[in-house]
Image: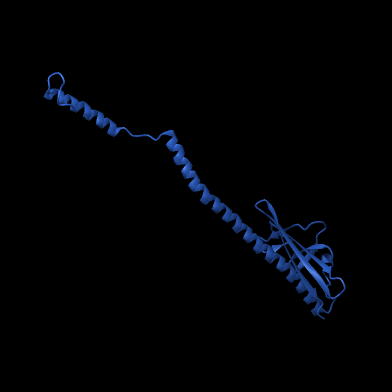
Length: 194
């Protein structure tokens, strides 16, 4: 607001009021008008938000994959150990019955067989062993009834060269995790301890 006028030296009160009125309207309009984000500001803010969210989500996804793999690996270990213990139990049972130590395990000698530990039985695998089943009633792995699992188990008994009193029991457990074929193998030597 200019109180001096170039034509008369001073501005009249009515002119001052008119200038104050217009300047007040302009400042009120500026104060009420919302300031919008520009397209570049919006793009930068969105990019920063996406980058800050993508890293933790990626880490969480990788952690989940690792946890599932660890869970499956532990299950595979126990399935393999269970099969070795089945062969040991059959050997011990044969000893108590007074029969030859590998009696009843013919399907597993030099070929693959599948073990059903809850039923204390086994069957030969003609080409590849089928997937183990999970019993709906007990939740145990078996080869008779239940929901198919991701695990297959093959047991193979081979003679150790040079002796008739020792065999090697090899158990291979296979599964697919996150589209990747996985395999766990355990081997143990058993002896005719009589």
